[in-house]
Image 1 (cartoon, rainbow, N blue to C red):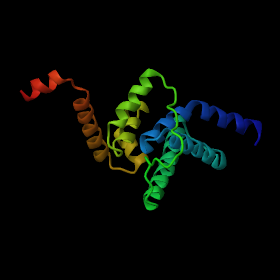
Image 2 (image 1 turned 180 degrees about the vertical axis):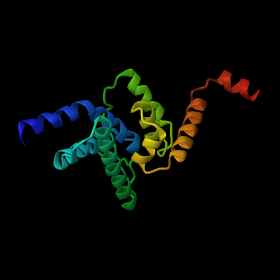
Image 3 (image 1 turned 90 degrees about the vertical axis):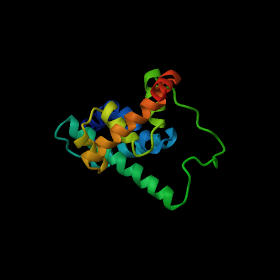
Image 4 (image 1 turned 90 degrees about the horizontal axis):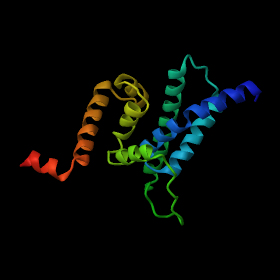
Length: 170
């Protein structure tokens, strides 16, 4: 690989690795697995070296590639009747150190059903609109908007305190 290509890939990696990792984690729910799928996403970047029209195209390509890899893994795990939460491992992976805000966002994502996590991540963390999220995830924009609404409703219920619940029901 020539020095320009290497610098190009290192630049993309530096700018995008955390976003791709968080996206993968929102899809698969496990840190170690998300790290592996993130690494594979960047390996695909190295091997294919696509030409990007602009930074948005670059980010969308990475998310689409990561989505395909995550879905392929999930489908394979389902086909092999493997549980993502299996206790077959002899060790538990330690939690990765995170900034407090990021840790809170991941905790919120964990409260959502698997189908809603990537939608919420792409909308709030990556700044995509419903139409763009639909293209990335292969869903209709109306479905994306409905999933966002349901996710917001679910999170609002999870975050409201006992007094708010009592006054609403009472």
